[in-house]
Length: 399
Image (cartoon, one colour):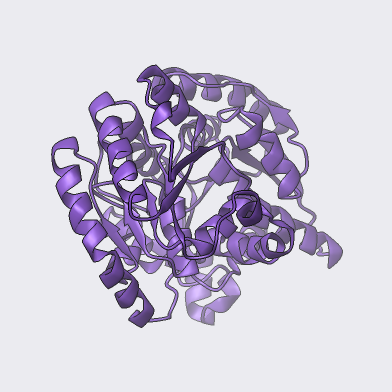
């Protein structure tokens, strides 16, 4: 079986790593089904700090192809990825094209493969924020509806797809997990299949944290003490591209830094807008604007933060998994379980309401930490075996 992974952004590299390890494990066990894995890097992230270093750190093989698309408007970027990915897919002719998450690389890769008649597998399928102002939400919906295998991270994601009309639902990541009768019926069912495999980010975090605790020196380098700082990330277009909103968010971070030091690794797109608006000088005193950090360093910063302030879906979830209180600088989230559990709260991002909501959130941080300590310990995102379930399911399709 030949599979082609299409990736282009930092979160996708992280999700790719457990799948690479699962394929290597199958090779070590000398599985009867040989897997050839082709990695297609779209070049959506091209800054070394968001790209090459991640491949090296995560132990990923060099991409077989780098499409070198770079930045641009959503339409241009998506179109360029489709055009260039189509040529590679025509040459490689994979049995499965695998796409990850919700970026322009995800949608473009899925569309290019589907239009060529290749089967598409979507890892992290079924997520919905129900906010179509977010480009990521549009990418999720369209990718799901042109995919053949939809690998869901949670029961909620499965339910979202059921509401959208998907019928063939798998309980686990392998047909053998099911009763003989149901297995026989579903094995003959036409695609698309919806499969709840758990969250591959759990696989990544469990593996990464063990390494991070041995290797990372980020707390010492930044002279930070556990629990004595907050961590912030801002990169969503809805927050960076509108001057008033980004200005309000920076004022909010300055307000937080009067209470406790704030570490803010600045995404390249965010840095571009901060420079344009002459807001980089806001990073002074106890608000520390730093370059993007490695995955392992980011895990350590997250694990030891008092509170995390973010507009990132992945960071929200990592905060939940690490049991660190999170305030999300958005109106909606595709990870509602984090909010329902008490570990995450939505502060919104509207400039007129942000300061009011921020002051309320600041007052609630102690309450939030207290409620987090009492929150249930169960994990709705699985136990860290998603990559193995994905590979088992893909293998079953070859029989």
